[in-house]
Amino acid sequence: MLATSFNPAKHASVALDAMILYGTVILPSLLPFFFFSNILTNLNVAKSLNWLFIKPARVLFNAPSASIYILISSFLSGYPTGAKLISDCYAHGQITKHEASSVISFTSTSSPFFLLGAIGIGMLDNLKAGYILLITHYISAILNGIVFRNRKPVQRLPCSATLEFSVNWAEILNDSTKSSVSAILIIGTFVVVFNVILSVLVEINFVSILASTLSKCGMPYTTGYGIVSSIIETTRGTQILSNSELPIKTMLPIIAAMVAFGGSSIALQSYAFLHKCGIPFSRYLLTKMSQSIISYLICWLACQLLLN
Image 1 (cartoon, one colour):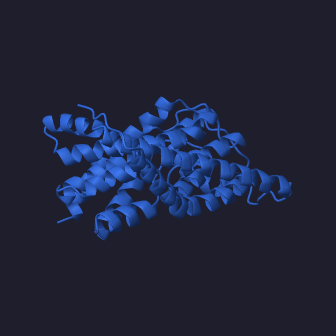
Image 2: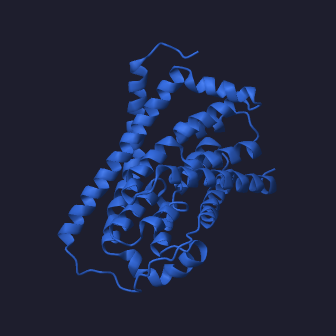
């Protein structure tokens, strides 16, 4: 049964911890990136690099060249950079609504810092496992993009090897500041709120009940607890999974699937930007579920081949 007690002080402490995490890790890593990426988008950098990105974008995904710029940025900075840049490129006419719904399938990824540093080294204390997680995560994103490959003609942007510097710099800097601050505040709000939501659900035994239900289907209780927690907030869930007694060959593919899905917090962070492109939330969830399955399969195979 659900517990009826409620401890506000405990949840306030969780909120404070989330704010510290946000202020010390997320804010300094994403705010400068959002600021400068917004400047580059205003300068039409994707259009200027059309000649470099157009072939891989068309061959792999039948997508505009801007998609490779978004993909690389997402690989480097993690969630929800891809969604933010899709929204920016859509606003600047560099991708269409239909193209945006395809591009999101391969540009929603975690960062190397989280995959290798936080999980591989910090949680698992296994650098090799961290590299397997890192590589399989990015391969799954590319394969997912091929699965959801655009089937319609792509809009043609003129090739240009020069950036557009004949612009109103005061307006660009002002827009970049407002856009990046707004985006980072949205992310911070979701980080704090979903950590508190997870804390409340744990306290009222909601997570335990779901984990117990899964255990009746043959899944170990701790594994079910970690999966349910990951669906709500990935960082907390992966930490629980990493502390389980599962063999690394079994544990790592599950973690890979959970990170690829991203959890409810990341989903709503991303959709805060994607709704501006008219992309249905169901479409985003479909692409993340597909990437999660692909990531699990690739990571499982890699673990069988590379881990003792």
